[in-house]
Image (cartoon, rainbow, N blue to C red; front, side, top):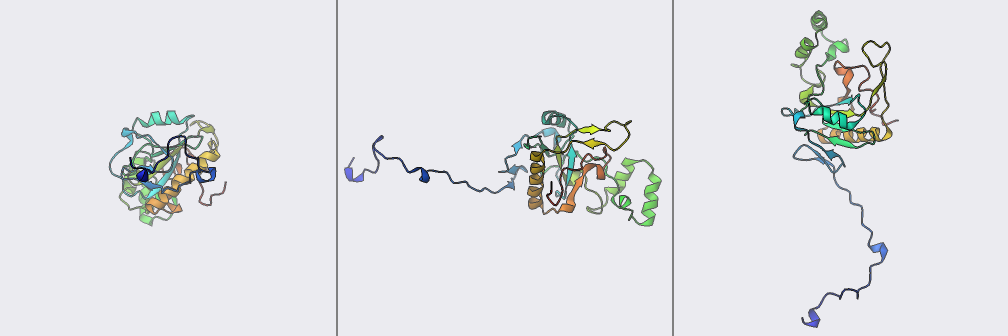
Length: 235
């Protein structure tokens, strides 16, 4: 090779760069929902569970907060193979598992309550009609599902579910007296829940009013969705 064209140095003959010039820069990467409906660049574990994904999602227009009432994330993920479960699971250490595409809805809400009846602001004739249903969750759900959101509560078809590994610790059985008490989410879980919510709010233009506790909109054990998140961000 012509010496004038030589642009490399023999191995062992070069000097090393100063350490200040070799530090890797930390790059900021955008967090977004990919074409497959999975959140990208957020550090989530993608663990698709085919049984969870139903028909196409409308929106989503809302987020529903749940507790697993189980001791481990693995038991919750195993249970999700039954076809009932949420899009996200948050482990005790804050690890987030995404198990279903945000393009698909999952079975996680159940039958919804009547929003106007709970708020005592239905038209008088509708209040009377609902009273006439008695204890009939299916009939009430069928009555409500024809309404547009947010006139009604969100349903499976248009909401994202976030499940947090957390157990009921007191007054948990059907024959127990008193309000059920649940484990408080760990600091890591609280941070991850807030992060998921923030990502979804940005992606789908949701507001704090679009976030619901499961037991307040459906027929679940009292407090099952409580204390997992608050809009102010206070601990």
